Image 1 (cartoon, one colour):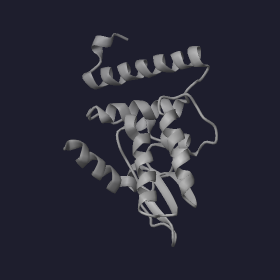
Image 2 (cartoon, one colour; image 1 turned 135 degrees about the vertical axis):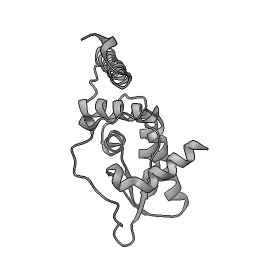
Image 3 (cartoon, one colour; image 1 turned 30 degrees about the horizontal axis):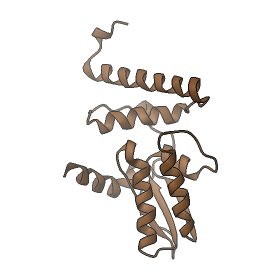
Length: 170
């Protein structure tokens, strides 16, 4: 395949993919950590989306069923958050702090970044760039009686996504 035969969108996807493969290789060689394929694919899609490219990568969408926003159970507050991929964990941390400051005790946090939800929900630590923020989230959430972190598709997180997008335009 000749790279010059690809259209602009295909070139962007290829370059970001090569970058992620190289990053994954370095993580494996230097830290003995192999990022998962779903995490890598999610990162590729999020990075391209956040760069403002109109590319749609249907093949890398999570294969979980689509969902719509639904209310939480009685006496449980639902807190949806959304932000750019590289600050996603920071948005999660801010959502947890916000819930505590408002005096909520039982909270369900929802986001459309499966990678962040998995990392925050995991019992073990990893060596990703966002690990210090994830550790902060785990510490702060101890101030709640109960806290759950759930993945929700973009369709179920539209309000948070629209708010984050309007905020980033300012």
